[in-house]
Image (cartoon, rainbow, N blue to C red; front, side, top):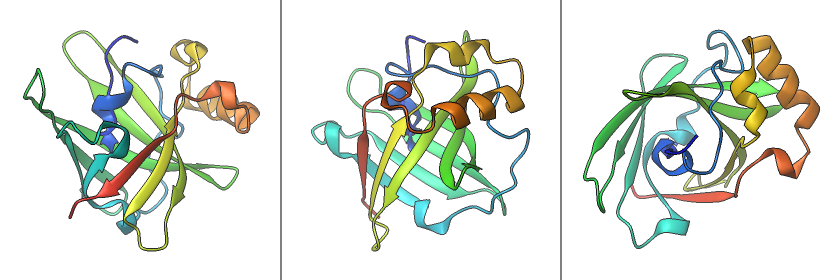
Length: 164
């Protein structure tokens, strides 16, 4: 995968596509975990504090989010993604559906921590190159389960701070 971002987690969708692999399937076929209100709002990535990309997470319905990414810098684009949470062995992941003219798939973001004030999030994208060959959501879940604590399975840790 050559072009990515996050969350937009969030915000991230736009930040990670360069550092992680997309999976053709999400962890779950459909959303089963309620949207977490702590993720809602406008976020910026600490590692790119000088850039002004803004990631907005909006609750779409009981289980789904809309992730809006306002890119600045060279592109000045407004992007929009659908997302939902999954749980693997009590670890939360955000499944972000990434689509553009030539690429489609899920960015899988492991949520490492949300501070008590819910204004800082630490996360890491799944960056294993074999994820692109997954044949089902069940296969994605199993691959994540078996690599849950393998640091080589993930990309760089990223930190987001709430703007609003």
